[in-house]
Amino acid sequence: MTTTSTMTPATPGSRRIDPPAAVARTTPHSSVRETWVQTLAMAWRALKKMRRKPEQFFDVLIQPLLFTAMFAFIFGGAISGSVSDYLPVLIPGILAQTALTVCMATGVQLREDMDKGVFDRFKSLPIARIAPLAGPMIADLIRYGIASVLTLATGLAIGYRPGGGVLGSVGGIALTVFAGWSLAWIFTWLGTMARSAQSVQGISMMIMFPLTFLSNAFVPAETLPGWLEAFVKVNPVSHVVSAVRDLLNDGAVTAEVGWAVVGCAVVVAIFAPLAVRSYSRKM
Amino acid sequence: MADLNAVRADNLVKDFGDFRAVDGIDLHVRQGEIFGVLGPNGAGKTTTLRMLATLLPIDDGHAEIFGVDVRREPHRIRQLVGVTGQYASVDEDLTARENLWLFARLQGLPGSRARTIAGDLLERFGLQEAADRPLSQFSGGMRRRLDLASSLITRPPLIFLDEPTTGLDPRTRGQMWDTIRELVTDGSTILLTTQYLDEADQLADRVAVIDRGRKVAEDTPDALKSQVGDSTLQLNLADGSDTALAANVVRRLLGEDPVLTPESGRMNVPLPDPDRAADVLIGLREAGLGISSVSVAKPTLDEVFLALTGHGADDESQMEAAR
Image 1 (spheres, rainbow over the protein chains, first blue to last red):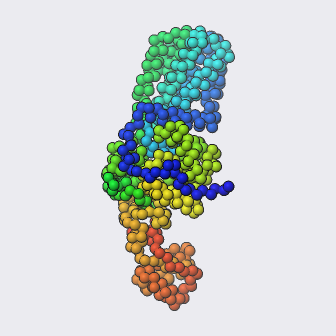
Image 2 (spheres, chains in turn purple, green):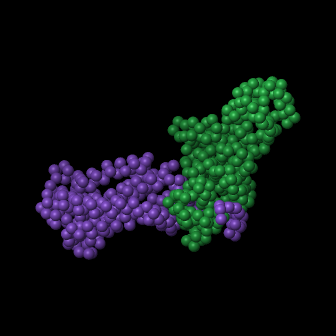
Image 3 (cartoon, rainbow over the protein chains, first blue to last red):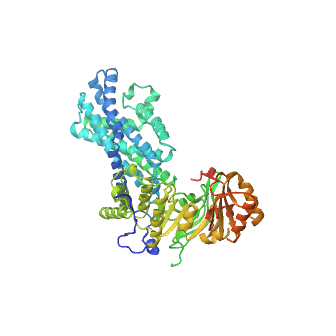
């Protein structure tokens, strides 16, 4: 059979379209339930894309393996005296860094995606403006999960023994995933603002490097010059790192954990509305 | 309520920086008709459509679709309008079936219903065999069909088609035209843009001609054509370099300027009366100018366009920027 398409209107239940009835059926906004269904549909789309383009997973697979081992063996002796003494300091730091890298990719991918024709359709459909942004972020939870678990597994393989035990480890990973997801809203916002995927990449790098390296992720803050120490102490990444350390190493839900969760929630509360606003304005 | 306009747009304006892409356009589209917006690249057709579809903010003017204010209630408008773009707006990374399923779910159809509708539309548009193949293997025509199918999931009463056949081969184009006609028999209203004059002629009940962001005419295709003359004498000269001489002969005999295409030695002569064709042919013979082919045709919208705007339909691509 060739492409003989007759296109006869085999419309199911071929009733004629009635415009006044269609107008009467319209609603002024998507309800909360509709928004949730739309967000899940967009998450499904993102998952399909992930499965078809496994190269997307390079960053979440390679970075945890490479960086954990590299940093441990290079800096271990210099900073903590030995590799095994450095691991309790390093692993939570690498976890935070990995989460940040992954959420950077969220912004870049969103920008790339938005340049495609299909976003025109998403905009022309009666869907809540947050759904195309939140959907991929739900799918990204898988990426954070893989990256965190792999980092911890690499740590275990080179001799890290978390003092917090299984519960502490699960808590630490959960916090990392939540922090990554929250911070991703910043990069999503950037993605809706910037002109191209490359510029998102560039700006995100400029944000990510100072945030991770000017924190207590790899070195104790007390060893830094005073002015730098002051910055490191207010850097939100430091709080996440300290909180993850408390959970992993001591299995303790400390005030630091509370602050990290509150901080992340504040980031979402600020950047999610900004991202939605900038997205609905664009194009 | 019965004679409520499908689209009622008054004095629409859109600026892109210093460039006024749409400069006070009025469009009144009646229910159940195919309304064509005709103009060259960059005339402001797509911009107008995008404003009406809530894809671009309206800078000035007022627009209603079935009585719903476009600026104030965009979410309602999106429930009433199906948009098919100039470039197929479907997801390249999904299969045809997945695309339709996704768009159905996004519009609130339950999963099982979404699956049924996707299957029905694939069948209706002759895509069932390619339904589960990646879109990268789709031809331009198949993509366009999928795109149109995606706009029909909720059977919207108004359908926007932005240059639905640009880049399609003649056979696929004909199929698309048939599909568009069928939509109207279902009760939909269609607003389409095109730069193909014969497309507007073939499909549209009424046509608005747009040039440089302004509407220069609006009427039925036949009425527009009658503004140019009843018919056209189409001549191909044996020697292309003779066109200027031949044009002089026509001017002397009929007092009208022919439309010339010197590269191909073609000349279109508007005829107030088909009988005058013989005069032109005799005049050319007397001037010693050879003819390779000749025919008398009803006027095309190309000529209408030239007559209305004073310039051809395709010499304006420098104003492409209007997206």
